[in-house]
Length: 242
Image 1 (cartoon, rainbow, N blue to C red):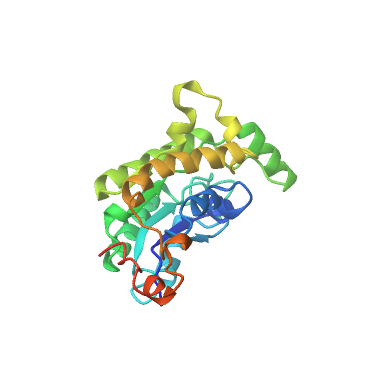
Image 2 (tube, rainbow, N blue to C red):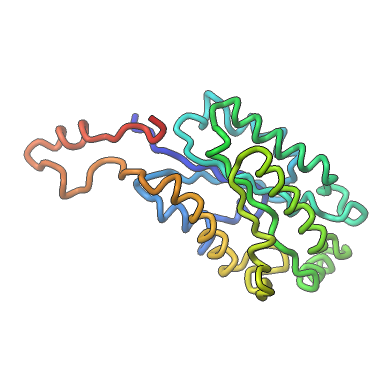
C-alpha cells in the first residue's frame, strides 16, 4: 500500500467545520492534493479536558502516527467559557495549560515531535453577536473577548515552553485595531473571511515544513505508455519523514 503523508487537524467545532465550503481545512486539503492527506478530527463543543482523554484513541503508534508530518491542536474557545454561565465546557486556565502540555507530551511518545505540532489559540469573541446566539438558546452571554485573550496568551506561552509553533489567532485578528468582526460568522465561529485568514496564516507555518513534499505517483504525462508498470510501481517517492 502507498502511504500518503498526513496532517491531522485536532480541535473543537472550528476544526470540525473546517471542511465546510470555503473552510480552512478544505482549502488546505486542496493545496496539498496528491502530496498530503488532511484528516479532520474536530469535535464540536469539546474542551481540552475531553480532548486530552480522547487523543490516545485517535492517534497512537498503531494508528495514524506513522508518516504524520503535522498536527494542529486548536482548543480554548470552549475552555474559556465563563464558569458561572457555562460550567459544562469551562476549564480553569491552569488546567487548560496543563492539558495542552499533556497532549504535546503524549504526541511525542508516539513519535510526533514538537516541530510537527502547531498550537492554535482561540480567536477573539465579538460579544454583541455571540450574546444574540446565547439568547436564542435561552442563556446569557457566556464568553468574553478579554477572557479568550487570557487563554490565547496562555496557549502561546505553552507553545514557547514546549518548542512548538503557535498561530495566535486572537492577536493576529485584532492586530493594528483591525475590524476582526469580519472574521466571525456569529461572534465565535469563523466566517468565510475568517477561514481564509486562518488558512493563509497557517500555510505560512506549514509551507516551511511541507513545501518540499513531492507529488505521490508520477504526473500522467510522465508515465511510460508502453511500460506503465515501470513508471507507476518504481517511481513512488520515499516517505516524507525518511
